[in-house]
Image (tube, rainbow, N blue to C red; front, side, top):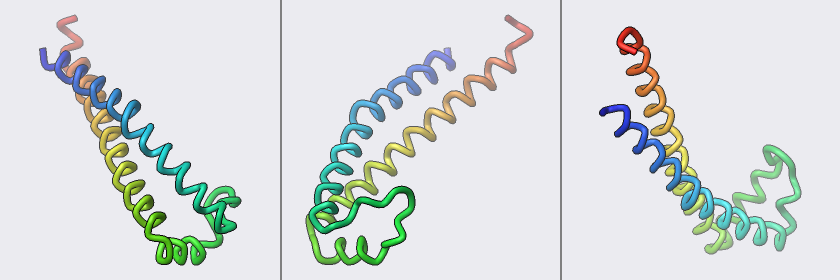
Amino acid sequence: MNQIFIFFVCVTVAAVNAQWFGQMTSEIMADMHLIEQGCGLGHDIGLSSNQEAYAKLSETDPKYKKLASKLTLYHSLSSLCNLCCILCNGTSLYYLAANMSTL
């Protein structure tokens, strides 16, 4: 019975992450990218070597700063959902291994 509950928690958290947090994160990143392009930024690949320009943009543009804080929030919530799924799957595997002799 515990494994069924853990399974549904994992599926629910994964669905919320995929449908809501993932979508919101993508939309926020797209909005931020448009602002960055308007300032001549956002053409770098990988870790940016121009961190000062992004910090300055965040200080001077309140909309960009608000988007950056929202991105941090949604990315953190998405990471928390992923961690919850890992813990649920690990717990489920533990129960499976513990009850292997009764299968």
